Image (cartoon, rainbow, N blue to C red; front, side):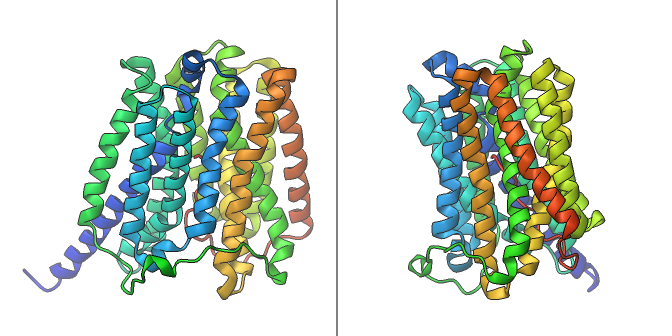
Length: 414
C-alpha cells in the first residue's frame, strides 16, 4: 500500500465513524417524537382529555431541562460513549414503557425517560460527531450533526404514522421497531472510539447554574424570545395537530399526520443550514419573520379548516424556527465570555424547552372551555406578539454579525 493511500484510508474511516455516530444520534432523537401521531389512539384507549395529551407531551421537556441543569457537561468529564450509552438506555426504557402501557402512568414515565435520553444526547452526540470527523471537516460534520438531530426528530412521527396506519399493532409495533434500532445503535456505539482523552469520575460533574453576564443581556432577550416561540410552535404542532387534523379536517390517516409533523422538522433542518449563507446577523430577524408567517398560516388553518395552510405552516414555521434558533445560539455564544459560555447556552436551552411545555399545557387548559380552535388562536396571538416584538427589536438593534453559525442546534421535540 502506498503512503498516500494511508491518509486517504484514515479520512474514509473518520468519516465512516462520524456518519455512524450520526446514525446513532438520529435513532435516539426519533424515539422522542415517535408517539406524536399515536396520541389520538391513546385517547381512545384510556379515555383522557386534550389537556392530558398536552401534559403527557410536556413531561418530556422537564426531563430535558433536568438533565441540562444537573449533568449537561457530564460527557466532558466521563467521556462521550458512557453518556450516550446511558441515553440509549433511557430511550430503550421509554420504548418499553409505551410497550407495556396499561394506563396513563406508563405514558408519563415513557415521556420523562424520553426527555432524559434527549437531554443526555443533545450536547454529547453533537460534540461526538464533530470530534470523530477528520481534521478540516468541521463544516461537513456540522451538517451530519444537524441532519441527524432534526432528521431523526422528523423520522419519528413519520415512521410511527406509517406503521400505525398500514401495519398491525399500531400502539406496539413502532416501539418494538425502535427498541431493535436502539439495540443495534448500542452495538455500533461500543465499536466506535472514545474521543475524550482525559476522563474524570462522575462525582466531578456539578450542576450547571444558568447565568447571564452583563455583556450578554442585550442580545439574549430577543434571542431567547425567538427560541421560546419557535419551540412553542413545534410543541403545539407535535402535541395537538393530530387532534386538529382528525376533529376539524377529518384527516384520520396517521401517516398523513406523521408526515405533516415531520415536514416541520425537515424544514427546520433546512433553516439551520441556511444560517451559514445568510449570516448570523440576518438569520435571527429572518427567523422571526418566518415564525410570524408560520403562526399566521396556522391561524388561517384553524379559522378556515384548510389542510394546505397546515402544511404551509409546518414548512414556513419550521424553516423560521431553524433560522431563529441556530442564529440565537450563535449570537449568544459569540457574545459570551469563554468561561461563562456553557452557562449562557444552558440558560438559552432552558428558556427554549420552557417553550415546549408551558404554552402547550396552556393550549390544553383552554381547549376545554374554548375548543381546540379557540385555544389555538389564543396561543397564536400571544406568540405572534412575542416574536413580532423580538423581530422589531432586532431590526432596530441588529445582532452582532461576527459570530459563526455554530454547530447544528437541537430544535425541539422532541
